[in-house]
Length: 250
Length: 98
Figure 1 (tube, each protein chain N blue to C red):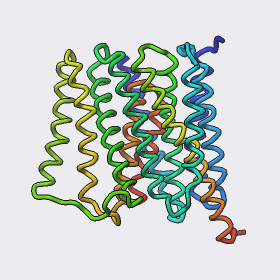
Figure 2: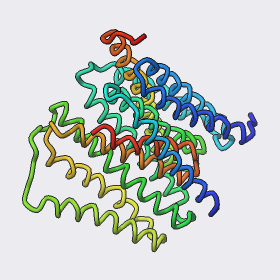
Figure 3: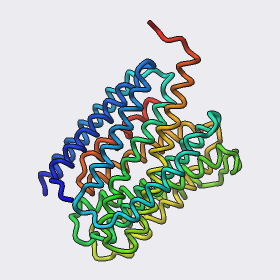
């Protein structure tokens, strides 16, 4: 099937408009449910447009994954209302996992041939993605009381945490300057996973909502970064819309 | 290439302002459903994952991409579902303004 690229791009344009409209409709209780419908329509358009892309040669795994994800999504959408905070945290973890995995694959597919700017955005994408992944899992665990709710602190904690993050950022800077060392990339993905855990352990259960908003905006930023890497304006807009949201749900 | 990048930066900036303006007026009552809605919208990253898996360039990218699609799709379905459920409760518990 041959679908011209501009048709796909127009689908994305419509999806982007529907996403903005969706947030807009969400701002009043009377129209809020229309906002959900606009969001759903936008998502369907975006996925349908993507499936028509000529670059797709094999649909088998896409279909399996879409069906499996939809099946997994139903119980996640039917949780009891009291469990909504941990569900939100868990879904941030899933979103961040998606972004991190795609970023990692992109690096191994074309990491050596992209520009330095793209490479640094790619590093930012996986750093934010992987720290959001473990951080959100920890937050969900604490809210579900699977992990101890009380804060765990130790001496020099901030220094340890910040040094861990600094090492990851330093390695990312090293990789951008010397793109010929792809093995460094594994550490750039791995170290923020540790940072995500360290970041959450000193925080008590009561402060979790603030942390969740923060993680939400990290997830948005990493999605926007992915948009820059893939040159997809749809992703940039969706990510930027979400990243902005943080300041209003403290 | 350079110009594409600049366009992307402009798009990012404009979208950030739109997000700021649109959400600024939101009723505090709607913060929780908004959070789950943006969760669902953020799963648009699935688009990148689909392209990755479909291109079938290496085993690694197909495996990672498949996991990514599963994770993102569960967010899409779960996110929209729970937002709609929340809003349904909202309507029944609060009389509609004329």
